Image (tube, rainbow, N blue to C red; front, top):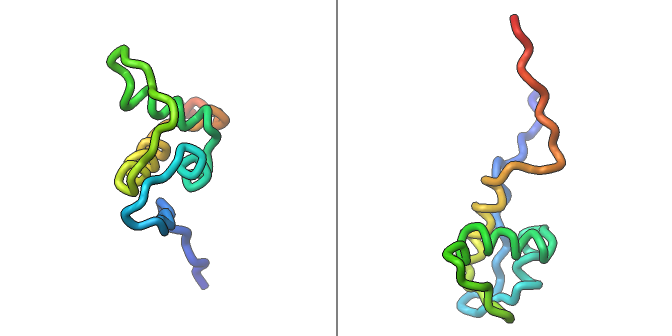
Length: 86
């Protein structure tokens, strides 16, 4: 008997169609801290020397893109063991 497999990337439940999300709402939707959200923004958007403006708002497309970037970064809490030699 096979056990049900979890999806590779769970879908976000974006319920505010056509509305803007605050930074706090985005962090909660993505399951990350505000500092990690700010890190994603600084690494992927505000990386040309410009500063991140206060009180950002996001569309659902922004949230999806941030979710992709969140999953594509290595987890700093995971320690990768070196490969064994055969």
